[in-house]
Amino acid sequence: MAGTRKPVVEVRRSQRRRRTVSAYRDGERVVVLIPDQFSRAEESEWVDRMLARLAAREGRLARSDDELLARATRLIDLYLGGYGARAVPASVRWVTNQNGRWGSCTPADRSIRISHRVQDMPEWVIDYVLLHELAHLIVPSHNARFWALVGRYPKAERARGYLEGVAAASCAPVPT
Image (tube, rainbow, N blue to C red):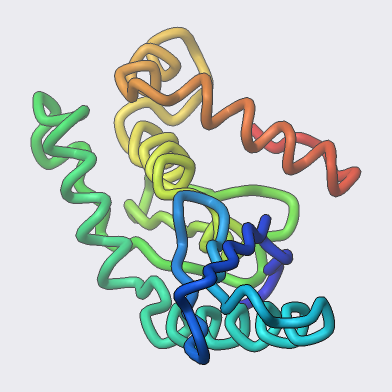
């Protein structure tokens, strides 16, 4: 996937494990389980191999436009339910041509586009970006009423901080 970065990896060695190696995600890190007798070179080789396997599996489960629309529907029900059809987009999709914004909304045709750069971010950040764009269907500008709608999302400030950190780390301007 575009914009992927190497995750934090925790290697756990086991004296009982003889030949098998496994890996799983634990939050935002990857845990790799290996036999205790592996050398550092074998450890490094298996970590790379297991990261590739996880990436391949997750690529097969890549977030789709349909999943994004389902997520939008859930967010509307949770945070914008009182606005009825005004909060419902005509389309929601991932796009690869937005590198200066996390997402965009065109209230006139009720379309929402979310940057592919957000796909690899934590679920709660994706929810924030999507809710931000959904709120634009109700309030097109970034006024107090708009921010009150976005503020209904409990992790709004945390997600904004996360996005600001990503932007700062990439030396990009912080999109609003």
